[in-house]
Image 1: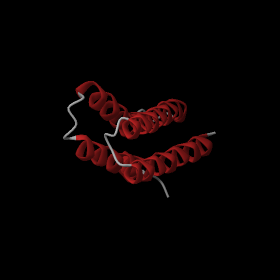
Image 2 (image 1 turned 30 degrees about the vertical axis):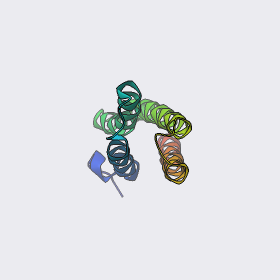
Image 3 (image 1 turned 120 degrees about the vertical axis):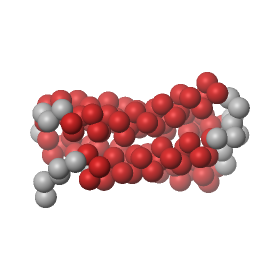
Image 4 (image 1 turned 180 degrees about the vertical axis):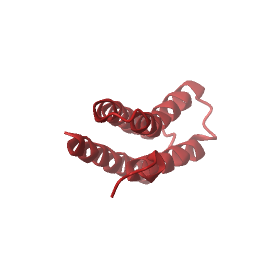
Length: 115
């Protein structure tokens, strides 16, 4: 199946859902520096998938997928801190971390396909 638009990429779709969930979950948090950082990292995952795809070069796409994967790790790191700061509950954190790990694996598989 040939992907015509980045919106068709499952990793982008999952990253978008993760981003929406993080925005909603952290809306009441008053630690604006923390909130801004995790939100920007989450947005970076989906946007790097989109930007890389739009470059129309496998080499550039692969680079942007690596950047997205790095941002996904940053989100995971921030989620761990959010739990330790009692910004989010343990179960919610575990669910979101699992989702970041799934997205990261999707990105890794996509990178392998471009090799």
